[in-house]
Image (cartoon, rainbow, N blue to C red; front, side, top):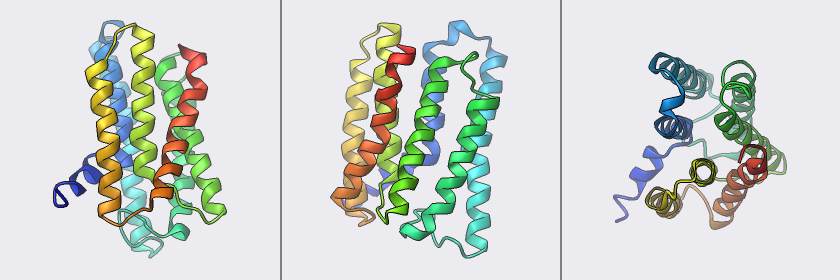
Length: 201
């Protein structure tokens, strides 16, 4: 089991969470968008939340600002988190805007506030698990979508809750985080999503 658990850390790396959330959203709301429009939104999301962060990661790696993809040291996390805040701000202002896709807008806005919370913790020399931030934010977003479309997505939600456990276990097995850091990640990921629920449900 210890050999299998680390797989969840890679499958549900924070970089991929935005793509998972967006794909699920467009599957549920595919009747409201033409195919080309969905492709355009997905391309923008992938570029801003995956490709640009990966490019910046390799730039920071080459400059010696970070030493691995997991960015375990508190001091090394500040620049990537700050850059993530900027990218999410750009995404919510120029691409996934309130008037275009309100549900996804509030998901990414929640992600922005999660990143701000993580950054504030870093200033206090405390580390929150970004993996937990991502998977928990995704789970609460899907719970919100279930209420929005009035479809009891019990299997999907149950699977995501199970995945929270697997991701948390994988981080502990890999000795990447303490239990406290996982709890901080849970709070940072879930709280903004819950706070924004009343604005789009």
